[in-house]
Length: 382
Image 1 (spheres, rainbow, N blue to C red):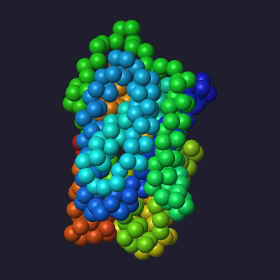
Image 2 (image 1 turned 90 degrees about the vertical axis):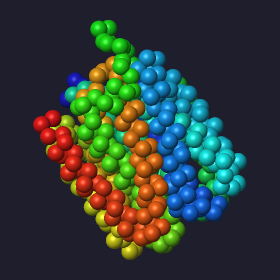
Image 3 (image 1 turned 180 degrees about the vertical axis):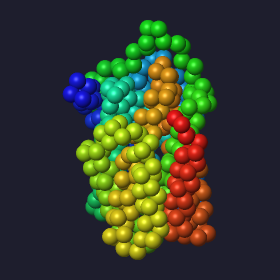
């Protein structure tokens, strides 16, 4: 293990750049509250978030093609500059209308570029024999900001307002760009490698299809919490955004720092199904939550599930994809999280409108349970 170190100078730059842009992004966990104050209902909030997802999905094929032909670094830098600009554009929104849709589309484009490129870069530089562990440790840069974004947003909104929160997001996004400049290009085309077939080929590759399915299930379920936790807290008065996402991130970070070696040691799929079970239990706990303690327990369970599910599935994607098409494969995988918002946002919003939050979270748990069973049968023998 000592001959295959995960930590390096480039890993540190990539981690910090990802951390800062993720912190800027996770301040927008509070955006549903801003949109609700402008007069939107839950279904409308879900639709506005879905617009962002549509934009992010639409640009993914181009992102994958550029990464596999031009490298990861240009995408990271351009995406960072675009992200800095769009965080500032939220200061110009004063009503529900066309302009908020335009801003959300631009935000979707920038986040698609950054999410895809940072994780592809990390997959490039970690040792192949410790890939799941390396991706899990790198993923702390995206998980920890979930807690910090919730808490920081709570504090800013208590002291000032949404405009100040948007200004802080601009500063964080700009800092991410500055940190990303020293990153060396990670992608070197194999001398005897074949020409990349493109995004479409990665989508239909048979060995990857079960992973796309499970990723879509995982992302759709997560949309229930990431889109509606703010309005759930506002509506019920149970706990706070900071409490839930702090418990969520704490559990995921502890799992990844101290136990990230487990999937590579015992086998990814042996660690995957218990993680999916924790995620399922977390959503059922949210459905039954009546006080802050219940919310924290639900956050811990969801965090444990997320803590292993994401790096395990993404590691399997990298392993099964052709090396020269890694950028395209990771673009497909990260696009699933936008697809989850696209489907889950309006669908779960509609459930809330008819049956309430408890039923909505129970449905999310059911989606995870059913998806795990289908994946288990579909991916047998691999």
